[in-house]
Amino acid sequence: MGKTKKVKAWIEAMRLRTLPVSVAGVIAGTACAMAVGGFNWLPALICLVFAVLAQIASNFGNEYYDFKKGLDKKGREGFRRGVTEGDLSPEAMRNATFGTLGLACLVGLSLIYWGGWWLIAVGVLVALFAVAYSAGPYPLSHHGLGDIAVVIFFGIVPVTLTAWLQVLDMAVLRIAFPISVSVGLLAAMVLMVNNYRDREDDAMVGKNTTAVIFGPRVMRYCYIFSGLAGVGIALAAIYPYVNTWLYAVGYIFVALYAGMFAMLSRRTGKALNPVLGITAMLLLLFSIYLLVALGCR
Image (cartoon, rainbow, N blue to C red):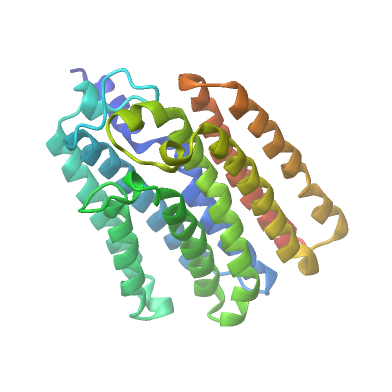
């Protein structure tokens, strides 16, 4: 196998289209810190690197463990998986999973300087989630718990932690917690599209995602509900902090998510891959909107 093709396989395994989800949580947390007059670029940057590395490790682990359990097949509807297609060895993917996770933990340890030793417990939980999403005796993604886990570990944890580490004042949670729920709901929409696309393949191998359990119609409505609720919660939270014209801009996202619902409803199979990517980018754009709105008061 050529070097260029192998590099491409590793890039595909990182699932770059999904990485805006981890970036968005840190940006939203920084926006919350700015809302209360605090901003510290260094812990924010460390949080960003940690979040991205942890997500990449989780993506690697998902590919490795699903392959080992025989849950993937060649020519699947979703993004190409290098291990299943024979581009990458299972051993290399396993090593990359734990190597990337270890690097994330080393980066995260530096946050102890600002937040104290209790952050080790948070790091352990994040690391366990990265693996338990696809592995262990009760993989979260195989039992309809993936969506809830995403709300927690891509919404509540990164937003509140990033905000608190920059201001070191629990008062920031008054805005950071509702924003974290908002970001978590919008992040879960990316997983919803992924599971909606793969529901038939997952059902055949006994992978019980929410899309398999509840069916496509319910998942379509869960998608639009999460979008509207996520935007609505955030707009309610930022209302006391932003200028009127910036606040009004936020309603654009209501229309955008309604458009994505229409696109989701009309597409199937590989045609849903762009929907997944756009959903992730919309979350990133919304987090940037929060940063601008809360930082330009």
